[in-house]
Amino acid sequence: MDLLGERMLHLREELRAIRDDIAVLTGIAIRVEGAVQELTVELRGMRSQQTRTERDATSLAERVGSLEERLERLESRLLT
Image 1 (cartoon, helix red, strand yellow):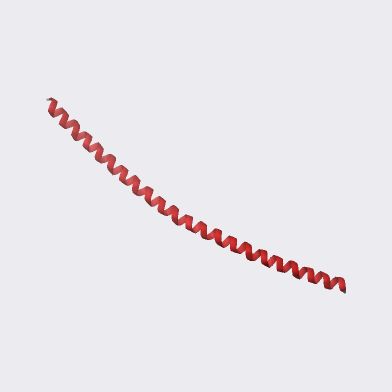
Image 2 (cartoon, one colour):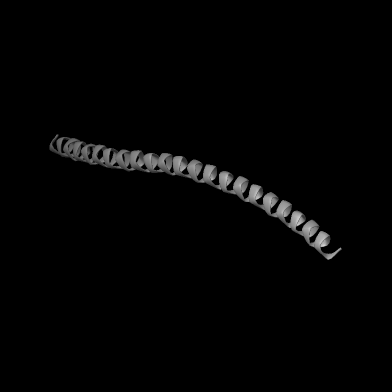
């Protein structure tokens, strides 16, 4: 009977240790999940910035092209 009682105490201690481990691992998982969510928000914001920058660059390239065409026309008028 003493052996059975000792074994039960040992199992209870192991169970407490497992519960503590579960609590710690759950906390870690929650923090990681929060970090992933924050990164997702940050990446969406960065994608929006990139899209806006690409749109602005395209617009500027079109304006430069238009100005180059006008400059060529003016130069040809001046040379004739």
